[in-house]
Length: 153
Image (cartoon, rainbow, N blue to C red; front, side):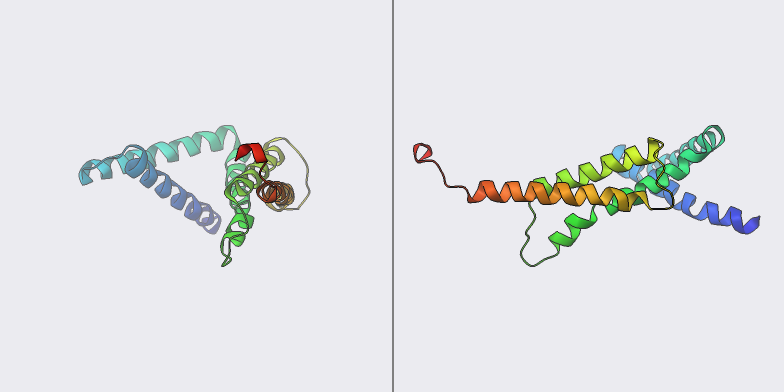
């Protein structure tokens, strides 16, 4: 029981500390260190309290949100991999369209009650992400290679 409680607390603590730091430094922009520390503490208490309430009222929601986070990070993989090349071959718009498509499919799979068995929903959502990214990149390339009409000059 102690090991199970510890295993549950470690990721939760990291998430709560991350939330509180983001809120106090970026969203609320508290400049004074003492006020920032108080704001951090209040955010930790609020986030932990909200997690407790959600855990008691909707037990599967927190795990769904955590899985949604990791699956959402998976949707960034094609854009990151293509961006690491010496010559970038992927434009920003196709990358964004692919990410949005993947995240949309991921949200639908996670909260839509779709039974995917034991397959990771992030990997399933990666397929439409790749398809939309490839098609959008082909469209962008075909438009950039198209000749400019004479009356446009």
